[in-house]
Image (tube, rainbow, N blue to C red; front, side, top):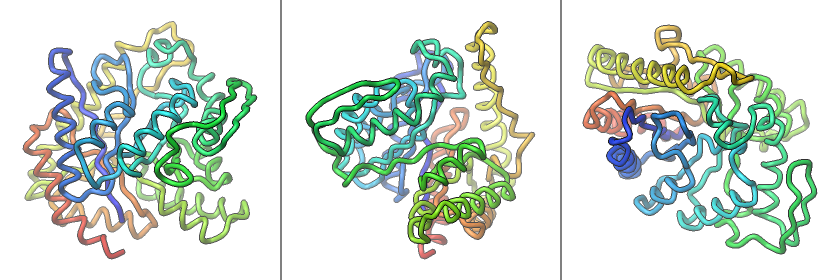
Length: 345
């Protein structure tokens, strides 16, 4: 199995932004030093609380400060980018990191309405553009003498430079919150980033994902490659005892979700035609949203995911309300006490 922390601290006040950006970079450096496989970055704007915003720029800083860990986007929001420009930026980042980039894509945010209003686009338009945006991204990475005539983009150029470091291009993974979007990717033979579902739902989705690819005519080896590049998301916190972990983690993770919910209320105009849903609280889904416990109890939860077919786990480990020394200790405990139990699988 592979494990990758998700780095996103929220900043309640602009005066704290620089300090929190520095803290996020330090957590990326720590993840590299501890032997995690991927550091996952995301993209959010205008919410009044997230600070590094652009994962491409932040990813370049991570690439410069790390040597081994892969840099994943979970996700880059395709609705906010011109695909040709994004192809050039990500090809450069893939070279700067010597082939450590994973490009996770999504149709656009479920974070706040101003992310669309700020870029002059609607949620529905972002959905419609996604397939074409990914297609143009791939062709920009790989083709020469490109003459592209789509519904949204009409471009022509001889060759994109630099070419991606990875051949033919960095791994491309799409985030799929809903079951139907996952099935679309299965029929296309594409790996996915799955959300925070119950153990039973995760098992059902993985089984359905595999069966749908086989029914679509993909070979067993292709299905295995896709499963090997598919990631399951969980929030995780470790302490010396389960009691301590729950005492420290539940209030911090709940405070972060409350902050996000409140930000959505503040930053979603009532007149916006396609409102963003408010996330449920941790108390509404404690058994699978947050794996908080001792190394032994968390390892048992990870083993459950492994046994149902998960190969990779994207780990939310660093809510802003937790002191950073406690976050660092949790990351160390997972890397030293949990990860080694699953490395031979």
